[in-house]
Image (cartoon, rainbow, N blue to C red):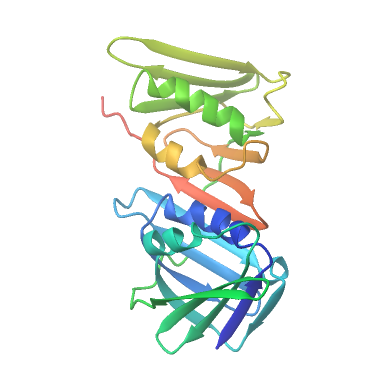
Length: 248
């Protein structure tokens, strides 16, 4: 059995948003160290690795290791019903996940079925990325909004001089150039020039849950999956997204 308590239910919703933006169903692992998940999206081109340590919770107790199959689409709708600052208590009751919202002397309890799901991806890809770019989540979101006006794919390009974004469409082109010393770049480390193209919609989904002022790290390598990392409410989120490979 397990039980964990979040002082403000909205914080747990914010963390779960990072999962539901990519997958509808998945298997949470609840252990003494915290709550984790590793899963691929249905198209098998994107992966999420999620971890929220036990120290992030007001109360946390677990016996052994529990694998809990969850429909995150349903779960997030319930979490969105939090009102004001409610405490959230999550426990397991046989084959049900119990979510109890507590505000003063008032309590609301939802019970959702625990699903029988296959285990997610066993490990993260091992990629020696050749460039690291750190910017704020809000900055990248603004760039993707511009890109959405032009095309469905976006090219990320990193060199010693800076970080560029290129988008080419039938009716327009876009190029966003940020020099290494610009205010937008929090950190830039380039071992060798790196350039790759990715589906825009996936990038939008991946960074949607990132707070605007939260640092976001992009690990890039030519024609290799990009690795994107950021934090949400004490949870560490890591995504991988496969590039588009152009065949000449």
